[in-house]
Length: 198
View 1 (cartoon, helix red, strand yellow):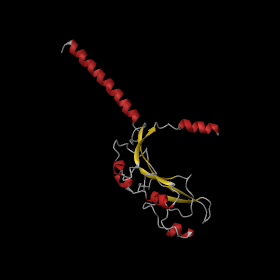
View 2: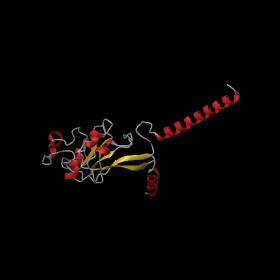
View 3: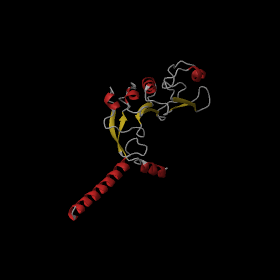
View 4: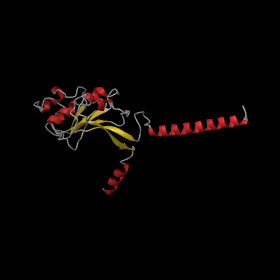
């Protein structure tokens, strides 16, 4: 090998190392350390006005359990003694809810906690995301009979950010779209401004 070929090959090798290092850094900075999708990205979102709680989200997601979870918006919730998203029998006596009430959620993910301390008092309903599989039964009941405070979301921290979401492809209501999520700290400045004003 002559000197010219040696220098050309050396230059190519150096370029390959530099390009490989830059590519690695770009990819590494774009991925979430937990391996659940990029930090800055578009995310899949469920339109609560189109969603009918059909349950396809639970079985169509490529993740097991699904990245879809139910949430209860406490600003909309009426804190009922008997919640349609929690108990299917609205006629049950208040003191029998815990022992005899037939739960809407097959995984018992809707949690009822006493807020005011009395039997006929105020209750807070939350969703245990470790038990929730995204079946949508609580959402369907709350939407049809309640205050529509329960809805489904595709959690960005659980979603692996498929380019073609299997849930979106199978959703009969076309309720799932890709929306801009922005960087992880997108809203930090807004919270700081809001906090400083108060």
